[in-house]
Length: 128
Image (cartoon, rainbow, N blue to C red; front, side, top):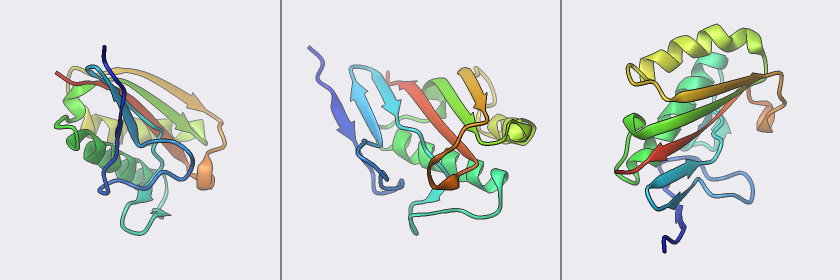
C-alpha cells in the first residue's frame, strides 16, 4: 500500500496556510497552488503578471527538483488568473517553460487570489 508523503523544500515559499507544498502518493505528486512569492523574502514579487508568473514557475521547479523531477514530469496544470486579459502574456511565458509534450491544462479567470496575487498555478506530476 502506498502511503502519502508530505514534500517540503526550503527552496520554495513557506505555505501561507494549513497545507503542504506538495503531497506524494505512489508515483503521483500533487503541488499546492503557488503564487509569485519570493522564497527568500516571503513576499509577493512586484512588477506585474510576468514577474509573478516567472516566480511561480521557479517555485514549482524547486519543489519538483526536491523529488528529483522537473517540468517534463508535469501531467496537468491549473492556472487561475485575476484578470483573464493576462492570458496572452501568461501563455507566452508558459511556452518558455513547457516546450514540447505539453501537459493538460485548465485556465480560469476572474478569481480573487491570496495576497491579491494576479495568478496562481498548481500542477500534478508523475514520478517515474
